[in-house]
Length: 211
Image (cartoon, rainbow, N blue to C red; front, side):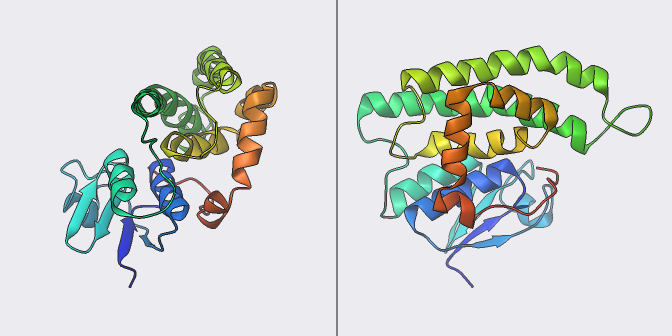
């Protein structure tokens, strides 16, 4: 049994982010694929959310707390910059991605496909069509941030560990792929980082399960 365990379904973008972080730090780990609200999750997280980290006597819920723990505990590349200004930018973008980008692209758009509510048992097209202008505006913000160097610069860090899985899943759906494909900075960023060893070695199976 590995000394480090990540408990949660590997398809979850938040589970995947923590596993990318571990791979970036060069830390071997075991992924225990249990769903949210399982006894294993509820034993640590009062709302039963995943991922959960177990490392010896340490048990942590919430992906950001997990990633920050990994960064401060293990050797390897820094996931959050030591420079105070750069660290504040990382904190800001981490918050924006997890509180604004992820709920729109994953919880609303992607879940419209994976948990369809249409009358015919398929995705609700009215819901998806309503989301598209918001998605375009959000992806435009990311495109500008990449162009300006606010995000996406080396070294790869916490912001990237969150963003790459979100963009990967968005890109698996037709509208998301079209929107990302129209943005050169975002397309290049996604393809470049999908080839990254830490992303490849933690690539989850399909299809996306509940996160």
